[in-house]
View 1 (cartoon, rainbow, N blue to C red):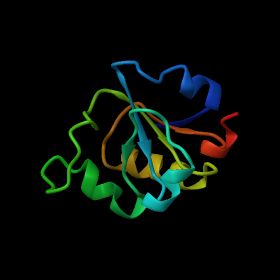
View 2 (cartoon, rainbow, N blue to C red):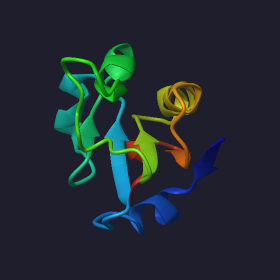
View 3 (cartoon, rainbow, N blue to C red):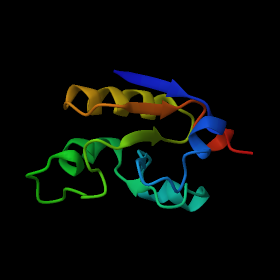
Amino acid sequence: MNDTISVRDALAMVGEDDAVFVDAREAGERVQGAIPGSVHAPCGFLEFVVDLQGPVHKPELARGKRTVVFCASGVRSARASKTLVDMALKNVAHMAGGIIAIE
């Protein structure tokens, strides 16, 4: 199941060993800022980045961690978090409001 969490709750998890942040924005959007330590996995490549057997798999996306997906405004991250759940990841959430909601 994917959940929606607030920016405040998401940011409270930054730096925790059992949480991983996934930035679903395009590469050019990251110049607007990113959450420290986040894994870049644009929506169009998400399935390839998560696939354990895939050539572009990112090991930071270890199964079992709390996965928090964010984007610019929260729309893509909602869709991306559903994709992750559909790929059998557990404990997935998307950050409501996206990166623009960080004050």
